[in-house]
Length: 183
Ligand code: ATP
Ligand code: MG
Image (cartoon, rainbow, N blue to C red; front, side, top):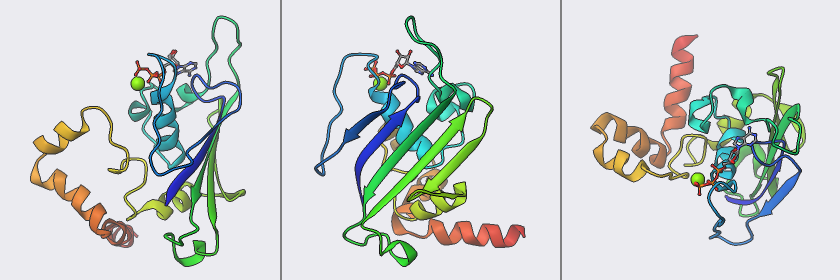
């Protein structure tokens, strides 16, 4: 599944609606320091359900909303949409019939957080479920940030196991078992 585009509005430094297209299998985001490159990565993680503000380099979840600049007032909400190419049917089951999967998350200053799947409101869980076992997802190895390689090399066997289980596609079943046991 390939990320085709990302649409940002009111998210961190992207106050005006902005769309970035990733037309090929390899894309690079370039720009001077502070121009918002890492904010785009934060946005990808955020839509996929990241619930820790710290992992998005903020204090609280509403920190992702544009909080004003010299010339602009803060805005009341942030919204991000990711569009994935599913034409090869990588995402099976009920999603196989969609050539494109669009996931959107919206948060307001009041703290409400909503998720949408191909335009229909859904639960956070519906979004995280899609990515479990695919290697994608908010904390997955699909997003390799600064320092992560050395963290992997230095990690304890049980930490490394989490990545191997995700790559092998069994983390999904472990998650299901955990849920069943907790019921
Ligand atoms: P570097 O090359 O240094 O890694 P970068 O391109 O990755 O830079 P980012 O960290 O993505 O830059 O962007 C930082 C900018 O985003 C800063 O100017 C910061 O003020 C701005 N920013 C972050 N959060 C918000 C927010 N909630 N509202 C407005 N601006 C924000
Ligand atoms: Mg950066």
